[in-house]
Image (cartoon, rainbow, N blue to C red; front, top):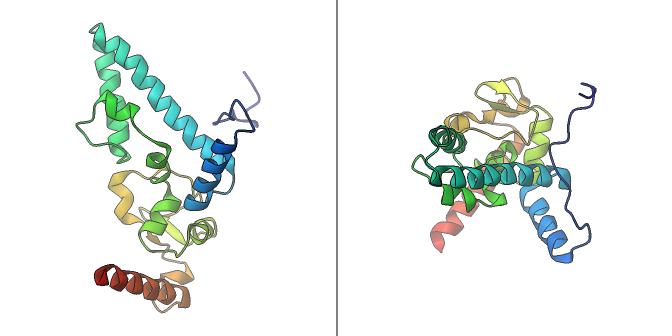
Length: 188
């Protein structure tokens, strides 16, 4: 059964450790999404592999008109819809065509960056781990948590954080950069 102090791994390492193309691709994703290490990337890949394997299994069972498979399919699509990874009218082909970036974009760290609460992915991670970000009114210190679509709009600075003051230096710098990017986008 195992010791409860040592939880089961939630990721699997690559089968071949020294593939140049895979290593370069992983490094690009680490930089783009500001991940701490490759374990975080492999955790997202394992989650994606679980979704895909469920979809493949359900595809075969739906061909045989298994009534329980229909319920499992609706539950899978419902879960992906809840996290805003797929729409409500998704099919098994949509689940099978998901990519790793679809999962990484739903992490709290990525959403903090997208909402212009931080300048860089690394800074978004730092703000979260230091307790400056709240999700649905509660302080969150885990950058890798997947955010549901219904609570995505509630991502803000934590009310007791020094950053909750709009006159804070960091917030003014971020707002200034966001204005410059918006003006550059309109000029083009």
